[in-house]
Length: 95
Image (cartoon, rainbow, N blue to C red; front, side):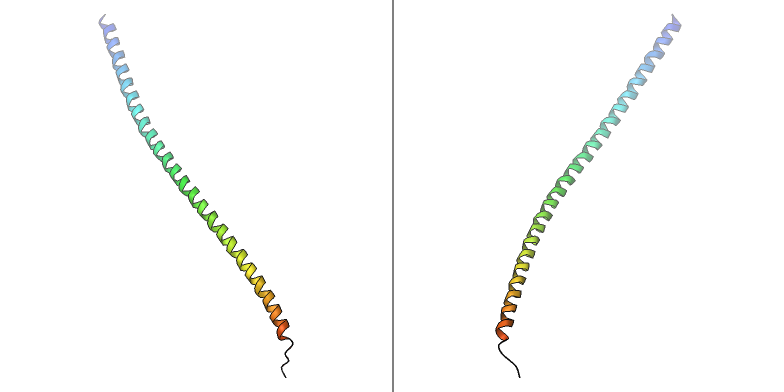
């Protein structure tokens, strides 16, 4: 009976130790999960900022494209004006 009581006491001690270890492991896992959640929140935030920046870059690129088209049109007009001016001036002869 004494031996059974000692075995039961040892078993209870083992159960308590396992329970304490499980509690500690659970707390560590919870802390790790909080860290992962924080990291995911940071990634989401950076992703949103990146998406916003990309949208701004696209808008700027579109504005640059419009400006380039306007410059090309102006250059074409200037070329036409230069050709007409050259034709108009060609009647004058310098001697």
